[in-house]
Length: 237
Picture: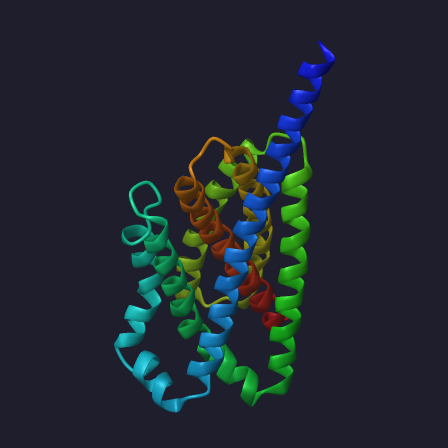
């Protein structure tokens, strides 16, 4: 290879690496903003008996529970929606999760020991998520098979959770929480690698933003689920 061509190739590689790094940082920043919106919303609603009663005091609580599914399935389509609309849908989802988590904020305020458990669960979830995402980003191993396995496992987890609504078994709850932690760990690793591989420097700014919002949503949901399973596991013990 001629020296000039080699230098051009190296420059191109550095540009792609810099673009990928900026793209990943953009995704993590969006996801972090979503987590902050959830935490702030949970604190605001949990601190107001009026808001608690408004959102969770009657049949409307069912709407709050189902709203995240409705937003994801019907209000979040990266293929056809503009990035600005995806942003609105993402933060709407984050706020709705915050309303649901307001009961945790209330319980933490009333019970200091539970409040400490919530803080520990959040710290553990954050540490695990960071480590898993770094592994997914740096590993050279193809993790596509992991994605297939964990999504099959998630369906099994949903079935087990529905069954336990009838059996109300604390032992099964522990198993479900433990399995949930493992599955969400696998999802985080797989999603991070998939995000990295989907990056294309030839994409327009709008297309890259749509992709970033979609990736941020996936990581956000994985982190929230990981936190919930860790908190549930710790609380059961």
